Amino acid sequence: MTDINRRAVVKGSAWAVPVILTAAAAPTIAASVTEQIDVNKSCKIPAQRQASDYRLYLNLSKSHTVLGVKIDGENAETWSPLAINPQNNVLTVATISNANSQVFFEVICNDVTLSGYVKALPCKD
Image 1 (cartoon, rainbow, N blue to C red):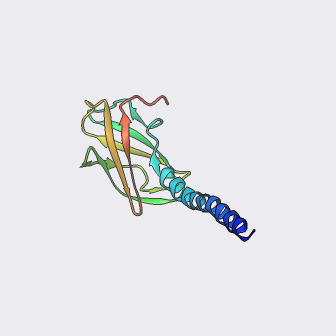
Image 2 (image 1 turned 90 degrees about the horizontal axis):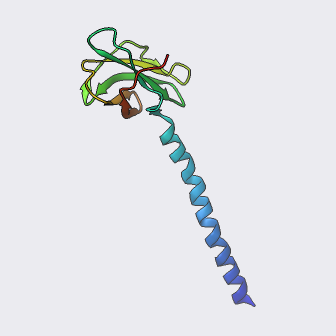
Image 3 (image 1 turned 120 degrees about the vertical axis):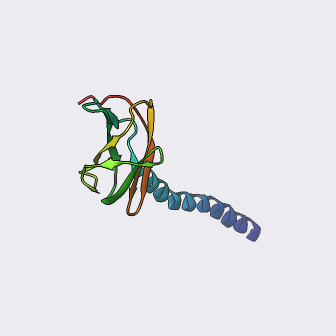
């Protein structure tokens, strides 16, 4: 009878360990996905001058300070507010060329870098 009780305890603890590990990993995965460029919503502003402007929509869970923006690895000009947060989450960026069908953006903040490929689709608004 003692052997059955030991087996029951071992069997029960084997089920408990994966549940604990999964619950601990979930917040880390969720936090890493939150801060990102919304590549489906971000768009190219219709050209009003030789350069092309892009509107980047950012998914944010907290405030950040933008230190710089890179486009395809090169520094870019920005004139939107450098303080961004979940309510103020749109960044306008000027590029030199409008030849690409998609552009790789990196928004470098004080505590995180957001990056992604944005298609050169015109903004709808």
